[in-house]
Length: 75
Image 1: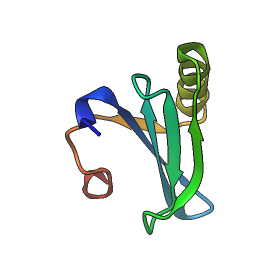
Image 2: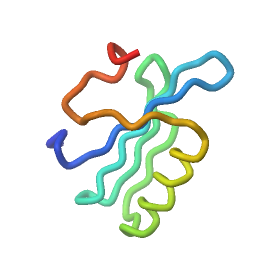
Image 3: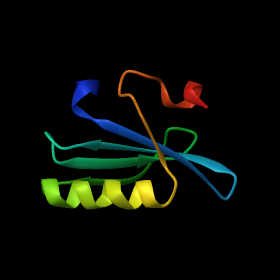
Image 4: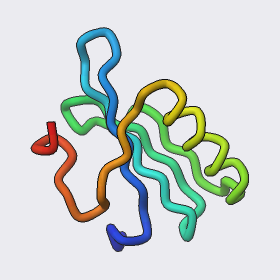
């Protein structure tokens, strides 16, 4: 995956770190826990669905980071 094609979101929930990777070109969303284990993976999403998910992340306090940064060193 080209990291420039994806958007990475990070947040803390119940004292645990989570990461979501949204890729509109591949029409996918993957959510990882702090151990980089996949919790949720969805493919075949529409651009509108990905945008709606990103809006929810933003409203809930998730931080969007540059696709070239390593998410767990960002904190």
